[in-house]
Image 1 (spheres, rainbow, N blue to C red):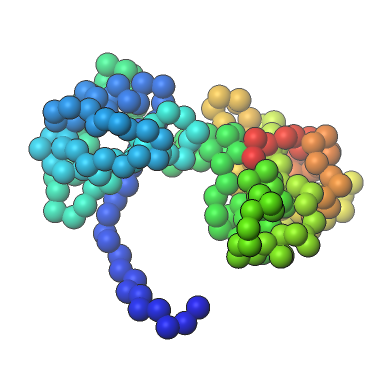
Image 2 (image 1 turned 180 degrees about the vertical axis):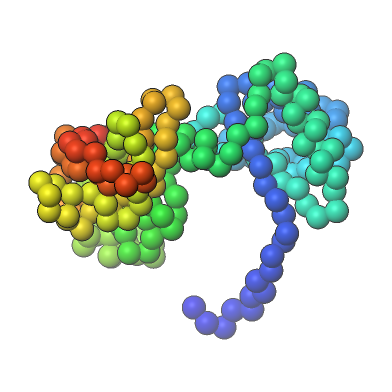
Length: 230
């Protein structure tokens, strides 16, 4: 595109999230005044928490019930954090690192742009073909998608005893194919490594036996690729 008048800025806004089955109860306790209504999935609301203006969105990267909150410059972020932690204490809410929600989003099959797919990967290859409606009127990319291979190449994988390295670390029968691990993490719930992988050969998929190079330097043999909810 050309001829557009665009300004790119950094809004200097920080985001965090509260996720889990009691997350909306935590929100109701944390806000000053009334709970925002309606507050449906992907809704946005502006509320006060500990006397500070906070932007909320009914979203998250865990496939759990939850909400995200955005901290603008100039507000007392410590006061907001303290109030939310206090509100979550009766519900046994605990702070976690990015590693925790990374594992959860991999288990849920939530794709991360830039690591699990990029502009070179079609929605079909990424396992998102069910979201493509080729019956719609003309849209950008429609002709390319009509001509594309519609087989899925992206699957979930469990690794017993380790966490897969990222990149081209999968092999079959000792011969490394051009197949990659896109995202990986340790799953506390499943007590094993979980990953999203993209296989070069679309005829492969659930049940495929692969060797996996792990972050501890070991190669763990015969790990089956399984369906991911993507």
